[in-house]
Image 1 (cartoon, rainbow, N blue to C red):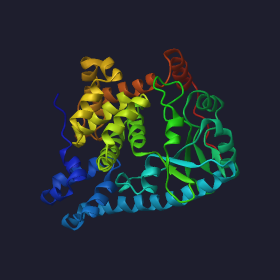
Image 2 (cartoon, one colour):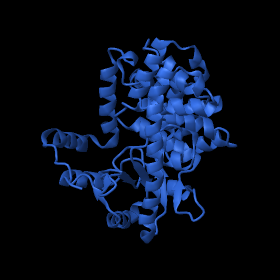
Image 3 (cartoon, rainbow, N blue to C red):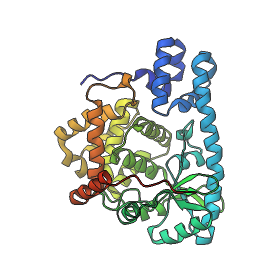
Length: 367
């Protein structure tokens, strides 16, 4: 299988010192693909962190600097918003457990360098969901979707509440009680995630998942979803997390064991496979072999894995013509259908898609 190369973009992300030799055409490709992948700010921030920023031409630096300013503003707003959310949850007595970009940023992880953060994702116990929603409503967050069917769909089948938006600040909050839909085939125990979450501050109000769980959540989210227009950004997150956490003693055996405990060996196998193939992430051979022998991966088989490669190696590239071939739109569409198939049983899926296709778009809420 011969696909368009994305070497220039990967090099910009992994080896910024090599970009000193880039000419205008290579820089043009990096900027176009990086913008489409939401990775421009990350490219610039990584180069600054490693001391290579001043080696680059001024023209591409203008594009990167603009994206970096936006990312920096989002990080400032995020830090303020996290404090407000933690304060809102105090009456309910529920600690704030951050997920994804908010967690990376507040924990100061390398995965947060130049990462865009458009909303805040949090994890709370399902048994406290009503208390959490009530506390957030009292603090000014309201549901962005008032359609009765969507409300029932989220609350009955999904792993999160309908998105909440603050009436004054306009910030968006996703409240999760699990990391996979309740109707999904994979059902990791959220209690295990919450029990292993680690506090970021002395008073224990703000938490993040433990390192292994951060990786597993990122893998489950990326390889269980069907919308992969920003799939490369998710893979870059995984690469950054894995490279940083690899410095922790016994990280790889603990990651493998945790994947088995949470029934997430298949998403982890996919994450390590494609992160290695596209981002050249170093992974111990012992971890790869152990995952290949796990029941979830063995059930897939070599033939189905070949089909997965044909789809994911197209969909995980920038959504840009220079990184696509004739089969890329088909691959993205099939993975979109696969994401829905994994999310709910066939009968429920058919009724859900029929409902979504035949109903008019609901009006935007007034906030």
